[in-house]
Amino acid sequence: MNRLKELRNEKKLSQEEMANIVNMSQTGYSQYERDVRNISIETLKMFSAFFNVSIDYILGLTDIKKPYKKSSIINTNPIHRLKEIREDKDLLQEQIAKILNMSKKGYSHYETNYCEIPIKKLIILAKFYNTSTDYLLYQTDERKINKN
Image 1 (cartoon, rainbow, N blue to C red):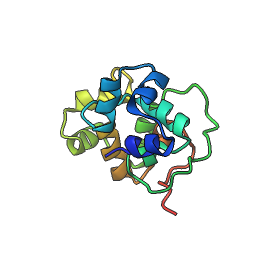
Image 2 (cartoon, helix red, strand yellow; image 1 turned 90 degrees about the horizontal axis):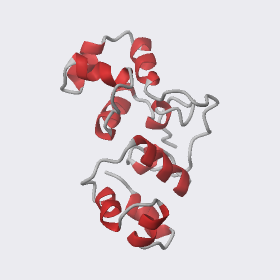
Image 3 (cartoon, rainbow, N blue to C red; image 1 turned 30 degrees about the horizontal axis):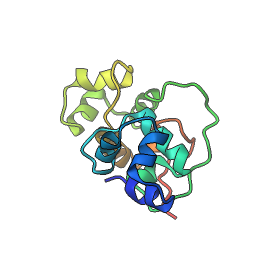
């Protein structure tokens, strides 16, 4: 699912060196590369900045490495875009919860930032909305996934 190993190898870094850069254990970092440990949104943003690629690229949603133009919106709760785009599509929380195979209450926690949305659910929503994860996380103001 993710391209962290490829990106690390391009920089000619070992897992241990990369783990030191991101201030974690080599085992923990290895689990990110093998997709057995969930990556937090903040850690994903850090990897995106370090490797100078889009979050969509790391997650395998695009083959374009170039990051999107940075968002003009600063210090905004990234989860608010989930509500914004859902309302733009005239959808109810119940409908989105069904897509994610969860309760409305559980989904509402993501929109209110009561808890962080797991990356795998974020990917499902990005695909459903045909929207970049970078847009959903306020990394860019470009809504569409970079395909060319």
